[in-house]
Image (tube, rainbow, N blue to C red; front, side):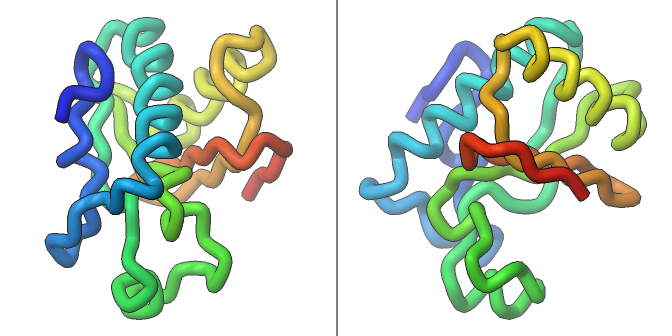
Amino acid sequence: MQLTKNFKSEEFDCKDGTAVPIKYMNNCKEVAENLQVLRDYLGVLVTITGSGYRTPTHNAKVKGAKNSQHLTCSAADINAKGYTPKLLAVKIETLIKEGKMKQGGLGIYPNFVHYDIRGTKARW
């Protein structure tokens, strides 16, 4: 299902093949809308590289946090063409400060950035 101009719900499906449950679709749409703001701002492809939604079983398999935002499809692990994770996180932080993206979790990893819509600031 098309969520925004550039994001489909299938991109958020668990890597074990499980589709995002209907009960989490509003979260999925909200993450997608925030990522669309980022994509429009950067003008480049933003890709969900690891996880959007995770089943509890898959979350345990990848050693995710027990209360991971991915369990409710409130997060996405992303990359943006031409941006290192550190630089991508700086751009997201700028958009959050400008009120264009929702405040939430922002984690910088070697190959991706975690962004979530928890509503409170969390950084790692």
